[in-house]
Image 1 (cartoon, helix red, strand yellow):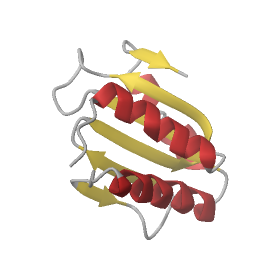
Image 2 (cartoon, rainbow, N blue to C red):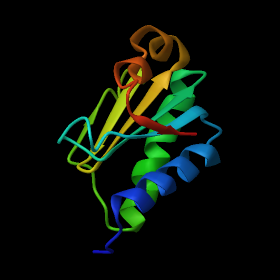
Image 3 (spheres, rainbow, N blue to C red):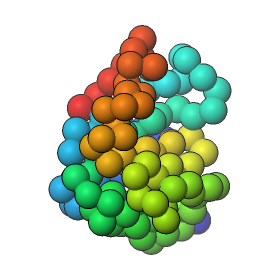
Image 4 (cartoon, helix red, strand yellow):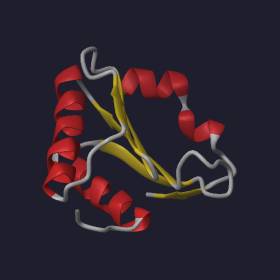
Length: 114
């Protein structure tokens, strides 16, 4: 297993999302707000196909580093896909769902890196 710290992993995930033309990518440091993770990575896709492609690319690239998610939710519908990598939780939204749920607002007191 390749050892990678959460900061580096979150940035790699951002790069993998960019490779699939994900929109509005945010890396949010939640270490001071919750114990469930160090970072949330949030991004959008313009279609279910793109949302699914982004999530599958993250899984593919992470597996090459021998990093596997604890859980994956929403892959079938591809409107909001959650990939739980323990210290980094990834939310890939269809643009409409992202606007509706507005996770960034829920974590408004955190540090957001774009």
